[in-house]
Image 1 (cartoon, helix red, strand yellow):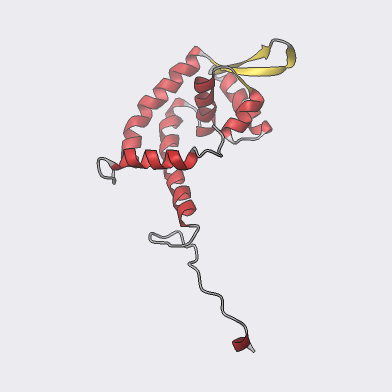
Image 2 (cartoon, helix red, strand yellow):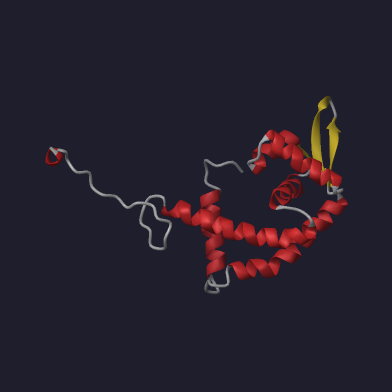
Length: 161
């Protein structure tokens, strides 16, 4: 009876190992690369007293200026409760402030403080040698090529800005 069942062509199974030819290989590699990059960023941010989730909000505030808290939720891939905790942390540390929005008493815009901007700049200085370590195994022109390729993947025409 088993001989009567047509055999499906065997496809590669995702293993996450180098040389994996499955359709999941790219996603698994990106995930592993993300873990390494996140560990490097955490190493840079830890001595400054913040985590990557805090820095993600600071990035948005630097790029956008004062931003509605609900917009930070979307921009950082967080949820409403999570972004509230992060903004609370940033406020406690004096790195950001919530301000009322004219015309809407309930809405709050989050704004980076001068102290937050100083920490943002310090994080970049601290991350520089660690980021170099992250790409140390690449040839001299490859980090730039990698950034270009990842930018094209991350910022496709149908993705959010």
